[in-house]
Image (cartoon, rainbow, N blue to C red; front, top):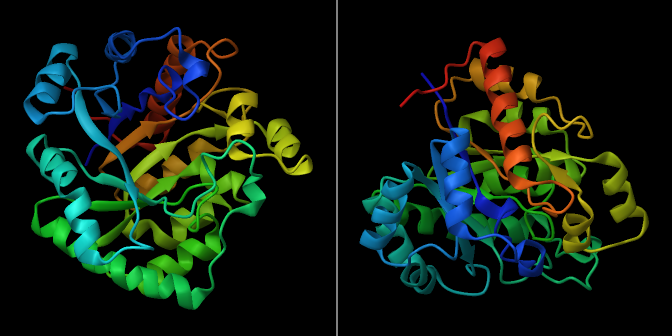
Length: 302
C-alpha cells in the first residue's frame, strides 16, 4: 500500500481567474511541479487536447496524469446525453491510465460567478439529491464499463457542497460513484473534514489536500462574498502553511487506517503575487511527505 503525490496546476494557471496567473505558463508550471518532485498533475485546459499529444507532453516533464476536472450537466440532461458529452474525456483518461475523472455538477453552480455570493448556491432537498444520485450511478456504471472511475467532487457554490449533501449523494448512489475528498472545500462548507472521511472513507477514491485561512474564510462569510472573491483574497492555501487551520496529520492517520492507496493531490488556488507557486507548492509537497512518514503511510517512489 502506497500513495502518490500529485498537484493541480491551478496555482500557476487559474482558469476561473486567468488575470490572477497571467504571468505564468503551463510549461513553467510543469517544470516546477517536476522539479519539486510531484509524480503527477491533474489535467489543465491549456494542455494538449488530443490524447497522444497529451501523453507526449506529460512524458516530456516526467509526470503522470492524476485525474482532471469534468464539468457535469447531468442535473439538466439525460444519462445518455451526459455520457455522450463526457465519453471522449473518459476514453482519453483511460488511455493515459488516470485514476479517475473528477466529476462535479456545474449546470446550476455559482462557483464561477464573481458577483454572486457563495451563500446563494443551489440547495436541493434530500429527495432531489437522491434522484440525482440514481442518475449519477447509471452514468458511473457506463464510465466504469469504459475502464474509468467517476469520482464526484463536492464543491463550494454547487448543489453538492456540505456534509448533508454528501451524505444524501452517497446514500442514494451505488458503489460505482466514488468520492473525491477535498479538505478545503469541506471546511469552507462548514463540515468537519475528518468526520466526513471517517464516515465515507470506503467510498473515497481520490484526495485533494488544501488548507483554509480562517481569517479569510470569516471575511467571505461576514461579507457574504463570492467563491471567487475568497480565492482572490486567499481563502485557500497548501498543507503546511502556518496560516492554515486543518490538521492534516489526523486526516493522514485516518487515510492510513482505512488503507488508502490512491493519489493525494495538492490543489490550492491563490494569488501568486501573495503566494509564489513554486515556494508554496514545495511547502505542500514537503508537508505531505512529513505527515505520511509520521502516519506510516508509504509514499510510492518512482
